[in-house]
Image (cartoon, rainbow, N blue to C red; front, side, top):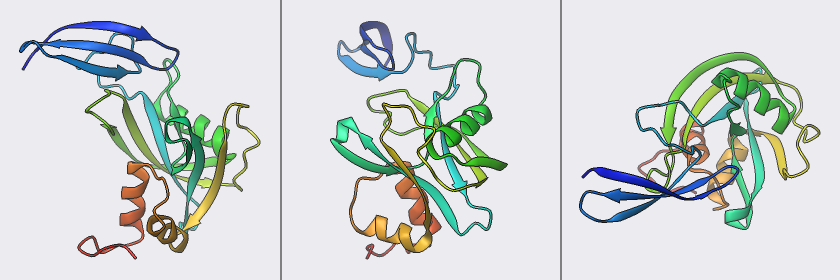
Length: 187
């Protein structure tokens, strides 16, 4: 299969809608953060931050209103990269803006990955950090509806078991962090 051409059908502030014309005659619909998507440029569009408290007994989650879900969703603090901003600069800025927490140390960073590659080329880098402070929404913009919180393993188990909206990245991490036996049902 080969992509013969790309037509932008709609360009928005944060998202662009394309028709990709394939060699077999089909048209494939794609959403992208980029106006001119380049599959060879592997720069992450956004950063997801897994922030542990200083004694590593809790991780920071956010409960954020997400319009496509028409409700709230648990996830990690995250945000889009500004032009020429490193993933570390984005992590530092977004963690403070969404949660009021300050990065103390940076741990492992994971290369850009894709959450929904069937519909979008959006890529997200994940960075593990140790952070300090008490979560607050005081630094959020007026259009954000985010509640930041420290979550222990016990609280994470409850979030996983009640079937609430949760991002795939957050669900996978919490499942592994709490030591869930993946061969058995949750509960």
